[in-house]
Image (cartoon, rainbow, N blue to C red; front, top):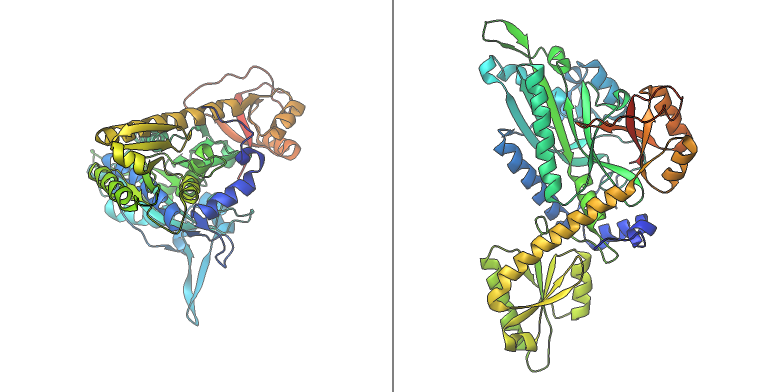
Length: 479
């Protein structure tokens, strides 16, 4: 079922988004420090399932789980010049311990390269120690100067970062591809659609040889960067003297990569791609509760219905399905329907005297709100079948929406019109950063990059200066 732009999330995105964040108990941004939000129970339960999925896939590929300190000494942070230039304006500094000024300043990690590579230097001795792969799930801190928005842009955010060291550039290149593949598996499991772009030189990660980013659509026309993968070359290795003894006994510089997935932005994408006017629509794989059972009371049959609902609950639990029996007598069935639709529970089971007598259930899909019947004996199979159908529908809708959001422009007026239609626009670009900056000034859209691992040939001159086009660049508004 294709979702039209008449949906509230397209017409009034901010109102829709704020309402779902609050009513579905995702996050609360009323914490008394700007840019810092509180994950509530339902929201954090979703995030937890996302990061557990990612951690499992990373560890299957040989990444060791680690946990580094949140503080980085100033002298370590300053070792890579491009890196400090890229992050210095966003750093939270620690200057005092109680009333005493520290001998050297510390900073809260904005990212962890400068915390991790001094330790890599201690651990890596020979080629036998490589590749070295690690990951950590942690909070990072950046003093964002742009307007903050829960999940999309905050001053503290939860992410997973992986860091790897290799014998040469080519092996690091292989690791970049593996990092992209791991992230694709997670995003695909969430039913998200995305494009993988190579960021332009002026927008790459500070200290990287090149940067790749997963960009996805948002109902307000802005792209949402949900993950990044970076080839760091030997830039950090030289700064931190990260060397190893090769097979000939020579000291050789290692090459490194890193990749990061922001769980707030990934959750936001899951919300905005799949949600509808009634709230969240969650893929079953990350739904804290996959099924909610709502008893339909009938005078004189309350005990029968309650007992049958409990039997259904046990049957689903035994099958490993995350289920909740909503037996709160303070709410009417209609109020429960509203609540659990807002929370995005994939399947609702309605149980009344009729179902109890027939040993059957009424099943309601969250994504389409279609109703069906199943016998108790077939319940587990029916529910699992609905999970598969729901996921396929969500994935298809997301992909169709991405395809419908892509457009092409060959002059600035056409580009400006498409930007106002909230499109992601392909343009011919000469690769000159000045043209990218001029384009941003004129149409309020940013050059996000070029397709990675796929060669798109320009079909005309640069949209800004008229010089021969070298690349097909993707332009959008962004968070």
